[in-house]
Image 1 (tube, rainbow, N blue to C red):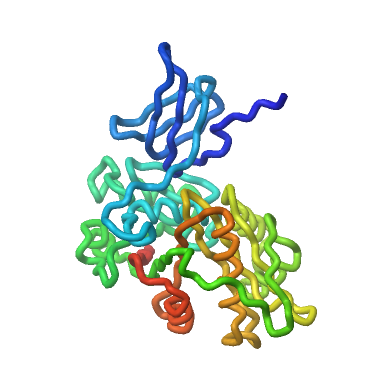
Image 2: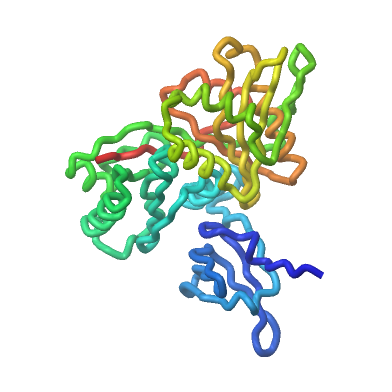
Length: 330
């Protein structure tokens, strides 16, 4: 019989409960997974970081974050917890930790995979923490980026980290809205007038990659850069790739990643000649159906605040703004 290690299903950044054997029974460690080594798993609990011998683990599973307010799960989650979940939907290739700050590197592909995510106290003064992060990115020959998040309409200068970055001549860009919805309220997939339906794949097919690359706007990426893109976009432990083909051509593609009871939508692209014809709505319907079939309750996505057509579509589908974030770059 093949032995399955329950820790194999976990990743750093996940909130999880890990049950292990002790002298007179079992005990649970509930919190954020901060490291997984060959022989140990470290979990940050209310009492601090616990390093657990993997040989003693009898069960382990992801758990959703605790709600911070009353209401539907997609509204009751904190900004901090949702930001942490979204990391699992678009994982970096390399992670660093500075106290509660997460340093992400992904060969320069997207801000999501190449920025500091300040999720709490870095354990240093703000100035010292920024210096540390700048050095970390310098070592990787990457631009230092910081992702700041806050309630809708928040001002960078209201945040101590934001004020310090502005004083260092960092510039804000890519102001983005994080939208959430209850999956039960999202409409199902309606077939294309041609009868075509969305195909869902566990791994991206060559047709999917070809269509997404054509829409990416960076056809001159080096082989190493293309490999990094694939690694980031295929790096979630549980994901699906959606492809809609109409009359022999690719009408649209999208990707959905699942973590901690949430579905995150990424990389939605529609062929330019088919925009505003219902393709995006059909792709979203297929992703909602796939999420419902897995018992997922909530969905998130990220959209630039300047992208009015996309925001209008998502709001019509039932999404609302949970919070916002932007980047500050050196």
